[in-house]
Image (cartoon, rainbow, N blue to C red; front, side, top):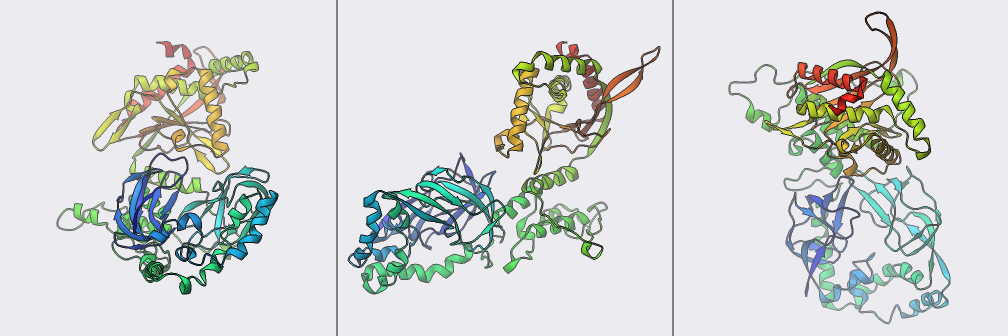
Length: 565
């Protein structure tokens, strides 16, 4: 018997990820590659498997803990014979303990396989979908390589997503991709051949070494030593008991709500207690629709959460406890004419939940004003002509960002956030701006705008906007904002009500500039005016302060020399 530390494997470019689900407990019989915990980053949820089979002696993580690559999450007691098994035949852990005994049986079969290695010639092997759990028809959401790319063993080739997790499919060997038969949006299953790759010399037999494993597994029970057979039998006997902890088709035991990581994250964003939601999915599984229905019921006053009931005054419900909303209408649109149904993009699903929360929880008020940008626009055009060769194009938004920084310095309550009953005033000036992408709006953050000139701001905005369009924005690129700007200037409109990006307390909306006749005291003169729509959190900012902020911003944009004052 031997004690083996189970570590977090390579989980990609993540520093620390949170443990959101524990799937096993001390004393459980664990199989190789069985999931132990579920971790979640800002990008994906993934299950961490066991590298060895045996008895779980110690679990070293709890819900909410942070782990990273190399962190020890568990200690497993293994049989001596089983210890090297995962390295020798990872795709077939059950057959591994017995594979050491019948050493002479596979020898004839191994001889032909060695021939390609000796010749050094390239060999074509199939790229197959490995065992990804009890999932069917998982969707391909990201392609990480293309035909002609040279890859290493275990390098990620593409990403698939189920209702439970997003996972990257690794390469079975090192070599060159010669064919790929799938694209984004396709669905795949375990065993599907999705391409071919060329491997050299000794790499070919290594990639295909797992193929004889199932055949070798047949005589194993008869020829293996009794000591080796015992752990296998114990693992098989305990399999039904361990499976329900992470099997999506079986209702869980204990207090753990039955929901996927994506649904759990959705519930956390809306503040929904999962243990109070009744699942309508298979075997009581909680779905996103269940979360939405529960939220609507609470808002309508039809259902009270335990927290609401505890906080409710004695003697019954008071007036205004709920919004008394009608249920959302259910309509069969197809009976009125042809329809087409499309799922919302992932960006819209995430942003939609955040926007709903912000609109309901923040008392929005919008102040509308106009700024005379005639002289500023003329200066912008001349600046672009002077810097034509540099390749940097200055936009009006760059000037607005710099003007907003000046306004934030003059009115610091706009550069603050609520933390309970405390107002946190920020001493930095990170400005978010809405960027339009094919999948929806995202808000990259320009950091330290107060320390940068107009040309640098324009350059960094262009780089962030390109990353957004290419889908390469990282979580760090969208965090830490103090104030956001949503610009519709190139499209049109006069005024609108932008929704505040919590935990910020204000957001500025820009519409299309228009030439208008303005009275100068003697006559009407044409002036280019920019509509300003300032939405603010009325808990922090009153109407007079908002009007002064917008008026000052208009003054700065009309005469940019005011920034120097």
